[in-house]
Length: 304
Image 1: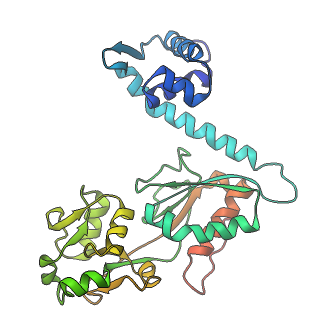
Image 2: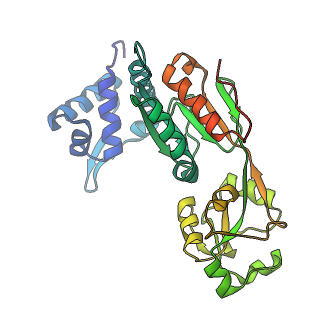
Image 3: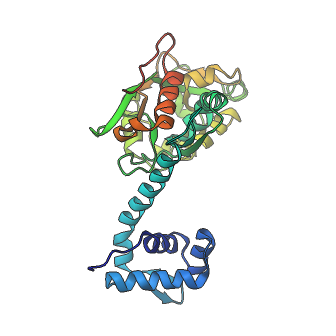
């Protein structure tokens, strides 16, 4: 491979992987189907590797194609980050450009929208991409520009600020408690409909250790790994589940259960890659998130 391989070939190969077919990749990229085929053939020739085989099940990636996928995804993330950074440069008379933020589902739906609404009201040319996932997106690989996380970032290349901690506790709708009764102890939870996770994760194991009680999958009558679904079930009166205390205080329809016996606190961090300090849009958004998520009477300093 003594020749440079153009990014467009990798982009097409990655799209074929993601879409599962040449026609799907053509639609996703907005290019002609024959062009997709030529790109894949050119990349296979340049690499000296077969990337796809055709079978009765359709187009199947080879082991080589799957092995190269993480690298192509990293290239795609960096290319998108380059476009976002370029869009925010050389602007006079205001901040513009695109900032990609990643946060958990509940944080992104229930907490961040008012902060982002105020930010865009002040800077209407700013574009926000909100990626909601309970999986940690890699800021070093530029999958996102800024992350709101419930764990402290470990990478030295990241700028991170600790903001307001999040207290979690058991909650239920009064309709459920009126029908089933309010538990008076942790032991009484065993006779109630509990709402919880389906697949255990490292975060769940750490949270269970913080709770100090057996919070096992088998104990849950209603299971979902989507935090928004769990919250919706609590609001609907389906059972007792864990919810952010500050979030529940905004809703009279959510009542805390056993507040003196079960409570645990998660740290909250806002982080971004140190290279983004030169981006006016990212620096402004980072500061707005830190201020919006700060405890009352505390205003974190902006990144220097």
